[in-house]
Length: 421
Image (cartoon, rainbow, N blue to C red; front, side, top):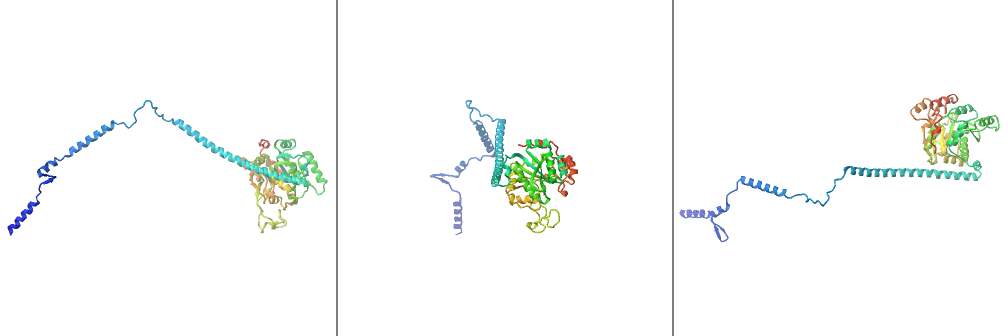
């Protein structure tokens, strides 16, 4: 039994030993297997083999050119001239910039043309209204007797019977006299007149004194109006209506006889707005509405302006302001129905407050007397007009007008150097 088990164990051991390998019908023993394996390759051989492959590949690629074969008949592309390219780019850039400027210029010219057309239409409407008023027997009959004199600006100097010395101080400073006044009208289209009505007793001493002064200087515009301080609104309305019936001007100016004026600077300011319609230019203000009786500038119709303590609407101060022809025509046509307040500057502002009017607030039209206007002149900001607010004109203007003129005047030749088209 024991031997049988031992024999069995030996048999098992024998069956686990590797037998011969059979390939197809051929039997390969272990000896043949060892022959098929051959000898292993060492590391040096592998390194040499890799190096040889690398060198062979390098040699092969060096003989194959990556560039196209030379062709002497085919022209070689020229390298672009950098200077020529830069010049071409500069030319194109200039053309683009020039086109942009041309477009902006065209837009600007179109805008100016539209604005000029607007003014032309406004002027034609006012002239048509004037013609209708004349045909209906209005107060402009004088315009039908002769053709209107062309002018650039009519400057009316508001004055009174008792103000001869003031008028003389103006004639001796900023207002040309005699032949120079006529030359200014002819060469520059600038009309300057003292504006006055008549006394309560026509043909009296006061009227005769004005007649004599006018005969000597020929610088008055007489109105069909009875002079009086509380009638300034009526006088102003008549001044514009009368002036536009005599002169066909671009602008009409009202100034007081105690204000210093630089004519050349005024013309330069007005020229800036010549192409615009409905211009109302001056120092715009908004003073309190005075309801208390007995005070200066009392407003009897204060209740129309709301609660006590309210202020007026914006309007130009009465010492100096300018309006364009269409607004002067508006005043003339609508004169009978234009309401007059106690203060003349308020009345003017009220006539325009509901219209499509351009309010031009020009602070150079209300400079103070020296040193204010002197400092501004030295800084190159010449004033159009100078006066003292505390006196609503130059305080003691008869004595001080020449001082203001010498200190703040632009020079007698300035008005002649303004280029008027």
